Amino acid sequence: MPNLQRHTLLISCAFAFCLVSCTRPTLPQKTDTLEGIASGKTRVIDLSYAINDKLVAWPGDPKVFEAKVNGTVEKDGYFTRSFWMLEHYGTHLDAPAHFPPGKSTVEQIAPEKFFGPAVVLDIRADAEKNADYQLSPAVIDAWEKKHGRIPAGAIVILRTGWTSRWPDVQRYRNTDTKGEMHFPGFSVDAAKILLDRKISGLGCDTLSIDPGNSKDFPVHHLVLGADVYQLENLRDLTNVPEAGAFLVVAPIKLEGGSGGAVRVFALDSHP
Ligand SMILES: [Zn+2]
Image 1: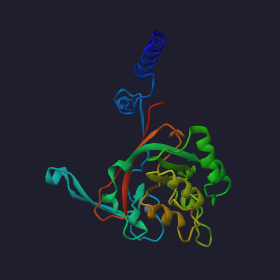
Image 2: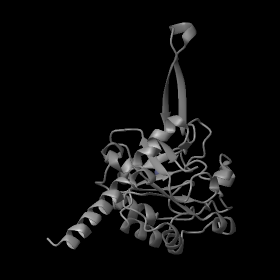
Image 3: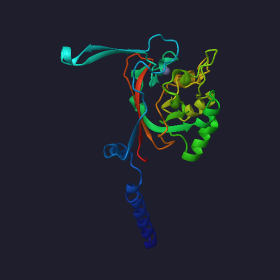
Image 4: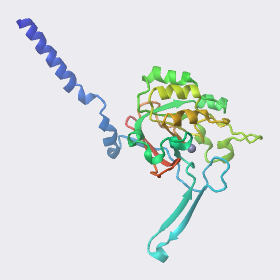
């Protein structure tokens, strides 16, 4: 090998080594997010409502939640309760089996799907003007122009601002005199794009992924049919950034469940 070529090769190798080793410390490390929890560098945002008998339920069920005291410290030396609740109550997960038959029930969803980058689509301004607003594909387009293509495994959340109405039943359901509810949701066209991105889950801060005035729940059919789970009644999303946070979704492992209570956390390492 001529000397000049060997010299160039050496420089190239040194440059490649430097790319790997020298730049590593400045790149955001995946583990930073988790390690930052203990030090307080990573903010943990709780996106679930505490469960009690006063949450806004989907209309129609006479009983939504009940807790009974079984043991008291005074009488039994320990405190225990039993409780009963709807599967779809408060902050909850819709398992794919909720609509199309033969799909996964809660305990069958692969645990890997419960961890993913959070994509927040903000429609607060549109929802304030029009309670029946359905997510326009243009919002997804704008998000991707700003932050890049939605990555596979993302958990996509719709921020409508509806949490400011919680837990006022009338304002949250926004039912008109004919008994029809009015709150914003995903459109079929937007959901198709998101499924094309191979997302793991879809979530919202309202009673349903479909808008309130929907009669046949087309987004539920489409999304659950693709074996993607949904999150409904998420708590205040104000502090979750549009991009850059990481979501942890921890549903109750209820065998055969069509859905169930879920604890959702957003981890933000760049607050
Ligand atoms: Zn549900």
